[in-house]
Length: 485
Image (cartoon, rainbow, N blue to C red; front, side, top):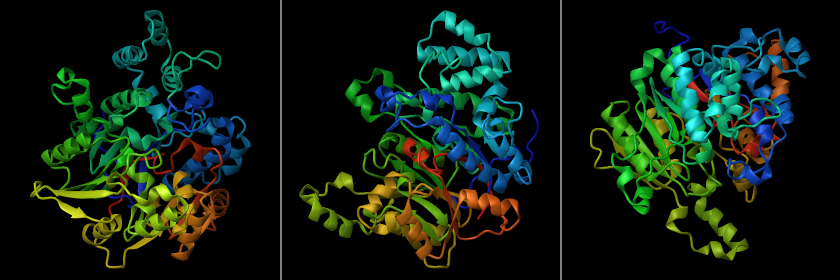
């Protein structure tokens, strides 16, 4: 194994520092095999059209990422890449002409790499077959497959176009959820849903066995179950379940992490994460943000993300604006008059110096303002951009299609969906320009724009199919390296 170099360095200390390296997974054939009867079980609201989601949507995301992180892979080559669009060889991890960027890192390639080691291959195939209840004969067949083909099968669930051997894992495109980089540590997830168990297993093998993480093995954090969880009655065990997904973890500064308690991340997991991060001296502050356990919200990054050190995008109905919004909604829906406590956000901040005396925040904006001023040293007024420009019903509609789930490529330059018109309007009212991905690529290619000098811009990605997968670009990224703010 090689010693640490620039390519293998891992360090994320904020949500907005210039992005240098990340993990992604391009939509694989498994997405095209989600059937209506299993869509909900596999955590999809609908079935998507695979060719559209690839060629007309996600491929733009990859090209934009490469222009910002690894321009040598695309600069001056767009015509060539696009001329091969029908075959998409540039975007296919199992193709010899794949881009193989060391900065926009494809998970399927990493999986192929580690499967070249016989012992790892043996363990992984056995683990997956046990998880999926495969026959011994099928296990032998998988062991005989070459690494590249096997990696594709373990992800897609298919040996070829005709033969599915187990369920696909269509949520693997949401790489944020498999693990989170906190400074130079990696916190592994514990998925809440059975449909994501194989994702977690594959990710664990990659992080512990791939050479790019070799120097950080001691910094990989797993949150174990309660020591005697198997002895507890079912109802008691439910209260002690460890479920943790990366969309509920935000590294807002080198000393401060946010943990969401949500539909997917349990309160007991939050408790264990706080104790573990303090015990290992990873950060000095952890704030637990408890949000309503609703499919509408899922993770904290579906209701807010950071744009600049002094600017955030969020859903107003869960913030300071909630009272006014609730009044308006109540006029239409009488049953909303009684707002339950569970429908409110609850925020509790723990400090390593005195963890038994937490600080409470009443509103989400109060917490985010405190982060901007006290953690990131912002001297400017903290500003908030609200989903749907805080207009009913566009606030809820656009939050559902991930108006608050944005990825910052650098401070003030974020990626989002083109369908969230009112949120785009709110960005413009706050001094931002907007540009569609296809137009941006032309300007980057002809030198009219430079990724290193772009400021205050929301990049709008095509989203007719991709948004139906119920995740934005914050979800579709696992940053490994960012510049410090």
